[in-house]
Length: 111
Length: 149
Image: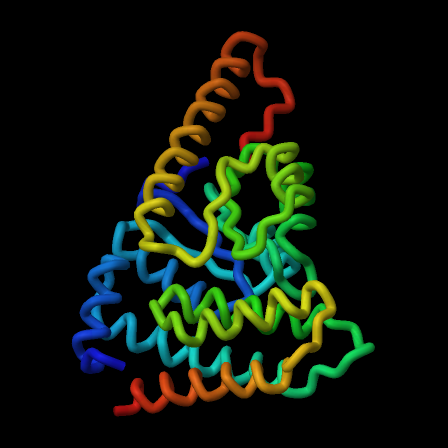
């Protein structure tokens, strides 16, 4: 991440008309939600009902984008789009990419 | 009926805690009273307990999704205004919104929250218009069974 945590909090707070403290709280909630949804994506297998997995990827995409964590959001979007057309090509790798982006953001938030 | 002690009562429905919190903080700072629900079923429970002026709801949610919520609200709370938000748009979902007089649809991710602010203001204006018409009806035709919930 090219900017410091405080700079990022202030930038997102300015965009949404909120305080940096609000954004930090929202980001922590986003971390909790994303962790749960990531766990759903890690267990997805071909042949099972994909509705929960699609919803999990969709949720990660939306909640991370709203706090301008585009790397996480983009990785989730790729997975959501693939699952919607039942495409499992390199899915494990893509879930792993998502997890790496998520862990990077989590580390940034805890810095 | 619009709650006059605040700018209005808004019910935010989304299964994502962070999105509910983001919108709650935003609208509370603007003087609205905010209620939240994690899915359509919880939203219907809130509607039984609170007078809600505007519902802002996600479409894709567990238990009862936004499409089913809209259909139920239109039957049970015909005057309540609805704004939908979604990160996945299908023509079927958009048509359901049109058919059920949803005021607008806001696409996720949100660039900023300005569209929410202006949409809620327009929805409240719309609500006031229909409340005025119901009052007019009452004054013209007597105190018939008008329910302005």
